[in-house]
Every structure is written in C-alpha cells, then in structure tokens.
Image 1 (cartoon, rainbow, N blue to C red):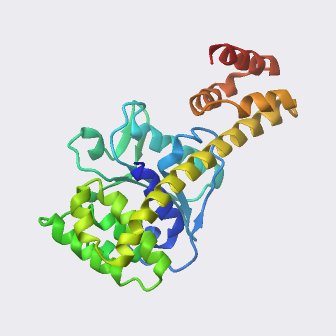
Image 2 (spheres, one colour):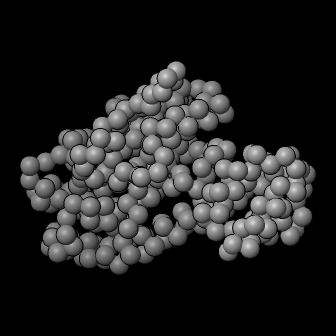
Image 3 (cartoon, rainbow, N blue to C red):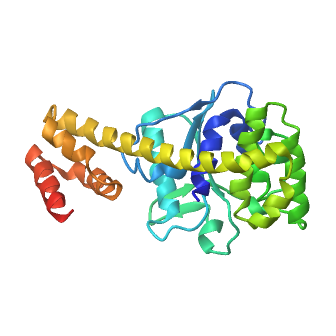
Length: 284
C-alpha cells in the first residue's frame, strides 16, 4: 500500500485544509496545487506536494519509512533550491512522518555541510494531538495516526466524525482513505469492527478502487511528467528529436527514466543521447 501517495492525493484534493493545518492558521484564499517543472527527480516526487498560497509555497512531503538512498535532508535542500530558483518567493517545507520509529533521520530538521546549512520543518504524526485534525473532514484520515493513549478510542472517534459528513461521496471517500491509512496502526479485523455502518461497508469496496486508482493514476502521471521534463530540455538544446528517439525515450522504464534525467545534463551533443539509449537498449 502506498500510504505516502494517498496522503499526497488528499493534500492535492483539499489544499486549503492542509495549508491551514501546517501553517497553524486558517487559510481562506485559494491555494494552488503546483505541477511544478523541477529539473530534478520528477519521478521520485511521488510523495511530494507543492501548494502555493497568496504569500508563499508550501512543500509537503509524506514519508512512511526512512529511505536508504540519498539523505532526505539533502533532498529537502534540493527541492528548496529549485523551487526558489523558479519562483523566488518564501518557501515553507514540512516533512511529515507517518509511522513511529526511533530512526535518527526522523528527528533531523536540517541539512548541514562545511559551508551550507538548510532548515526545514518536521511533523511526526505520532507526537501530534489529534484535536486539530478531528475538526476538518479532509484531515480525518491522518487523525488516526496521532498521539493517544487509547488508539481504539481515537479510531472510534474518527469513525464518528466521518459519519457526520453529509455528502455521501465525500463520506465514502474519506472513510476509504481513513481505512487505508489506519492500516499503518490497526489490524483489519479491528477496522472491520469499527466501520460497520452501511456507508462504511460500502467504503471497503471503494477503498480497493481508490487505492488502485490513486496508485495507478499517480504512477502514470509521474511517468508522463518525467518524460516531458526530459524531452523539454533535450529539445531546447538539440532541437526537435526524431520520432524514433522520442519513441525510445517513451519506452524507458521508470528506473531508466530516472537515470536519464540525472545524466542528460552531461550530454554535449545529440550523439551522447543516442549512445546512452543504445547502451540501455542492449541491456534491457
């Protein structure tokens, strides 16, 4: 289950609610979801959401577990630099950890090297009081992961709040999202015993549809975005690519697109791209 992708889905469906939560104040003006053209890591941004308020950009990143790859603190600096380069307005970064762990990474709030220091904000949901999230239907799915001495009571309270949502479609959607995210903390038997009303039972089916749809939709969207982000700079540098080259790029796998995105800026001429594609074609 892609819990971080589901949180991204929620943040982009309800940007005002998430902006109000992380900023700690009510945001009444429209919040724009940025489909930003960052020049690096378009595919790895599966758990990243960029929201633009009237005065700043919010970079929200949801994480379930610590990645063994590049340090996430470096990624936060990387995103900040590219966002600021493109928009040149204040940027607030919030890294939201979903599942309890004592790994040192979840307690880091900055990147630091010999001459560079970059700070960002961190929310560890298991340390957050559930109250602020219980008051907004869009945030109810995250409330089940908040701090509590009585997890089952909190789950029951969230279910009661979900039942108050008047719009049937939204109630089913929020219930489905809650059931999926609650799987990080509760077993399915308990979830089945809590969500027993007709609307809740219907959401079990909707949950499966939503989960598959969100994951597939995000994966397809990320791949399209990644291809576009690779093709645009290559076209600017080398002119329109032949149909054959475009077809080869479109046939690349996700890991290959990641590799090409990272190395394409080293290409000096079109032959470098052709050589790279040929080598990966022979290895596939």
